Figure (cartoon, rainbow over the protein chains, first blue to last red):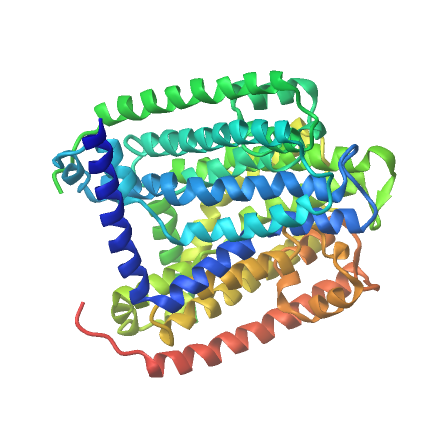
Length: 264
Length: 269
């Protein structure tokens, strides 16, 4: 077990070093990309700010509370995108070129190799925008209790599991739907439900967004936990993320089984 | 002149056929468009729970704003910037430099073909979904002016994006600049929220920038009234202003294009 972890860590750091060296070759582009990601992630909070500035509100949510949801969304993406979503780009590019076979030949798990190849340092920039917004939002709400923080930790892990599952589903889809970069548009549209307080949706939609397509788990439920509005029963929703992740893993491997090489 | 029109037609038809082979790529908009709109539907219903109007918009007008902005975007959508930067970075632009037609006109012809396909696959079905499934009134108040503003918006979007694409003639990797600029363009065009939500001083600045003509103006022309930074204009007047802005942007594009072509050097590809 220890040998497996050590091997995985060695691979991870080797790839990270290479990626860092690659980014440093185009430093200005790297810095610009990070700044852009930060700016891009602040667009939805900007809209929220403009809406609240004009005197309107989401019923039951102050500006800081609404921004907290969006900050947690940014933080989750700041971790999930660099680690998991590169898989989507890797599958998109390699399957189209017919060079995905090279990953099948490596002496490591195909999923692990796909993930490693897709590691993307730019996306860590999202942690900056998410972090700054998180601090700002927290400054305007009552300090969360220890229980709130504990619930948040569990639900945030569930949030990462949900995002990882989306990466698996999109990446798996690309084994059959070759070269369609619009999978990112599908992701953005579906997860946009998760960027706003859950109470703006009808009860039925809220249930759907918690247990069926659990995008409500990405940011809304962790925010609810921090605000002290969720009981321990909300942790039950985290179970949905585990089922969702298992589904994602099964789907990815099933789609990999359907991959037919173009012999590139 | 007739030869040029025939060339534009031939390139447009070829692009139409090429993209028709990948129509599922475009047809995915049938899922994405309504899903995005559904989110807007919930957001604005929640915001309007305790009020009749917000920044001069009623709930119906706000939903119409986002519905119209979405469907008109399917008519004017453009990626000339990405395409041009790719051609320059890979060196493939050299083959276009040798052709008896400027690349900007070739790219515009491609856009005409691409959006003609988008009209059937994206615009018509989503227009019907918004109009009948969401019950949002997106039928233009003055159809002839709506057609005129869409054509102008189509051109404005192209010229702005093409200028952004031309930064690749001067920069090694212009991808970052392109994305920053397009983000600012989308915000300044009122794609995320109507421009009347911005502070008064910023609205005055936005009035003089070309970006409002890509989305905000066509949307307001569809609705039937125009106002920005306290300036109210009739529909014919704002479409006239839009036409002048497009002509100015076209002149800037041509100037930049000639400067860029003089700078370009490529090796055998």
